[in-house]
Image (cartoon, rainbow, N blue to C red; front, side, top):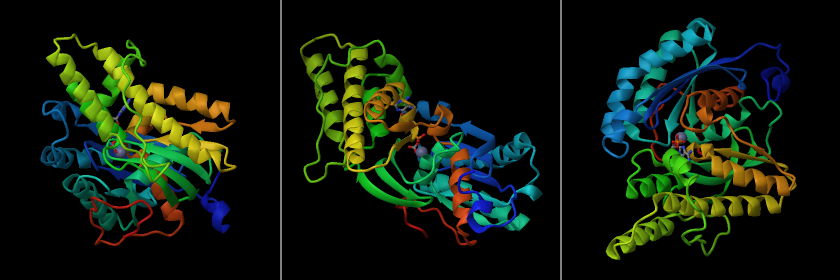
Length: 352
Ligand code: KG4
Ligand code: ZN
């Protein structure tokens, strides 16, 4: 198996079991992952119902809900995996980026369990986790490859040079792709979280009905900008209202989504144009969008590129992906101390 401990340092083969914890936003999650590629359990306590009442994630509520659930999800992850804590090799936990109060709950819980059980603690970058979700069930995938991470807080075009070693080629200058989905969904009355709702409604609409802009960032071919597109949708809705015209929400959803997807695909293919790499990976909550997956698949097929996409459950926030990333960090010898803190704006590739 790729990158397994025995391959790397010649030690006798031994399964490595990681208990992983994720609480950076509105999912309280824990998982047990074997040898970085096999998910033995993946427990997620979603807070979506409560945040839906407020139209978005309320940080203070998220922290409180994490506190209520964190111990339960860790116990449940061990129980479902049928692995006692004494058989775990390390505790991995997301320590950034994310909501500081939410991150702190996971970090504190992971530190407490690691300290009490004498296990090593490995802090994991949330975006690294999203990228590593592609290693689950794809034993053949190994760096180097390119990846597009599209989530509620991030839009990054990344060159994955090695396990845990990244070069950011492009990023959003303003809104993240998922954020744009959520804001547009709210504007057309679909509620939170907007991405899955636009994904579904757009199937009934015409993606060519409304000409929304495909933003270019002048000094970078890889960077993204979605705030102009969001404003264009809001202006379109206002102008229809002022003229007393009926709004076709499915057409708005489909046309907006096409504008986002066109740019994501175009920039990704531009990044692949000047490389010999034949593997490309999608990651993050927006990667579960069926229209994005289909458009990216078509573009990759035309160029002889193999597209990797995690299962939808590993696209949105989960702890299994943190267990995978944590495994590779663990193999490299990364260990964090009891002073590990939540770092809300942690940069990819930065180690604290
Ligand atoms: O990765 P994720 O769970 O959390 C962050 O790290 O941000 O991503 C959540 C984002 C939300 O903005 C949500 O609307 C979006 O992913 N999303 C989708 C879909 N499912 C989730 N966006 C488009 N289509 C989807 N099917
Ligand atoms: Zn995420």
